[in-house]
Length: 380
Image (cartoon, rainbow, N blue to C red):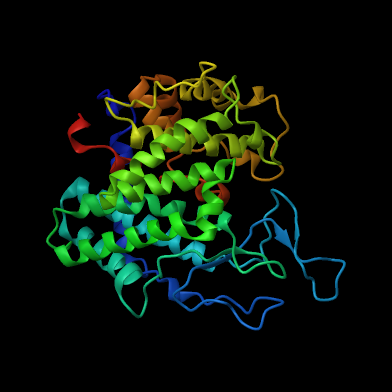
């Protein structure tokens, strides 16, 4: 990686991360058990326990043509504010607090940040009374149709920051060997569920951003738990299953066909770049890998970058919702900017607000704190 992190790791960004870490010291500790899903329409009870993650599909709405509103009907791109998202919000809050505390600890070496972060990790993942079970059997359920779906696994994309936070916390005496072992066991169990459950297998084989996000998670969790076989599996799927979803011009047709083509195009590129960043080796450099037609990740960057720098030139329809929220600061601008020397992406990252005030934009940013993903020895 080129050592040009000064182009984005500004003093203002460092101060902001430390301030967010200070805020996280005072924030309530989130637990998956803090929000209990309501009884699902059409079922006698919620199918899981208080330790089982549950959510409803975003784009599903009550049926206006039936007395009981079942089965729900789909309105692509239109989020139903009445759907249950309490567990998703708690998981995101946990991730953000831990990531900011870990970043503040890495910046300052102050143990108060590490102590709080480790406590949150322990209570969310390990403690019997408050832990989240390592599966997503009931994610993105649809009332009147199903108790959970494979595409719900995208809900845990936000967990990808957590292993990097754990690694940043490793020097702290608060991150004991037992806690670290317990956390690795949790992520190994979740990865195993992803790879073997019907929902996980269905998500892995989706032919759009869902499979991309599946493999981002599998790559992070396999590297964290030392599962090189699965990391290799993710690398091969990037080359032979995910990249072929891209057209010769670098666009992703399945994302352009959605009702939010700008948002989804950014989202899929962000996660494809993350896979290149995670899985590239000297022997197998995904940044340089191309399809038989000659197209690779550089073409995807070439396709979208002009529309990030000048949104008014976007030639496709505007997104049905949240169009004004994008672009936002996104990690692929750093990863591709640093590795490939794309200064325009680094400058774009710096020009955008520290964080978006739009919840849709924040939800679609997989890597909340890219500073944790960058090796310390590469920062100059």
